[in-house]
Image (cartoon, rainbow, N blue to C red; front, side, top):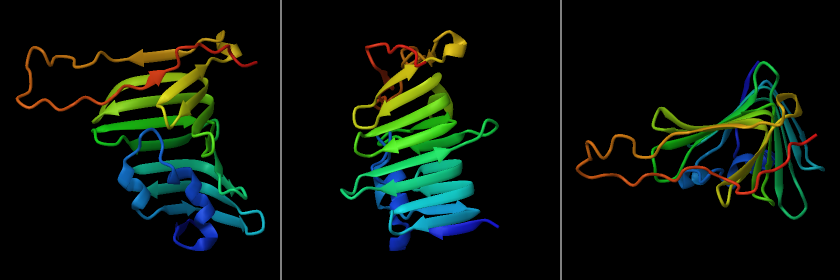
Length: 205
């Protein structure tokens, strides 16, 4: 039986770490909106300040949606927050969020999603993909065995997998396609593309 949990109870505030800092230049208003978690079951350890949501986990807060088979959340003594969303081989963990100020959305999928508020990183591990949509149109995408995304700088690095020869894949659409031929009367500012690290990383063994 699915349980809907409205995260205003102090007992469940540890789960807010996955969303509280915002990811990928997220819609800033999301932080001020109520957070809701639905799952088949919940186990909370007050002494350790950990929460474990299991079974068809769905997290929503404003424009942000996360889905996973299981989600583990903890908070340390300094208030730093860490979370791990687990998927399966047939259904990876997933997140989607609107970027601030533009009609663009970021999606990510991986077997495991790790969020570290102290390092300001989102780590996508195992069959990882990230995509950027302009409206409903896919604009950019990248994939690899591991993607590390710095949420404060919008810089990401991608590692390939040994099984694929250490290769990574990326598709980047040209900017402003067709706008010169038919310029808009009041052109809107284009959002920034995702930026890859200038240093290629060696494939992880």
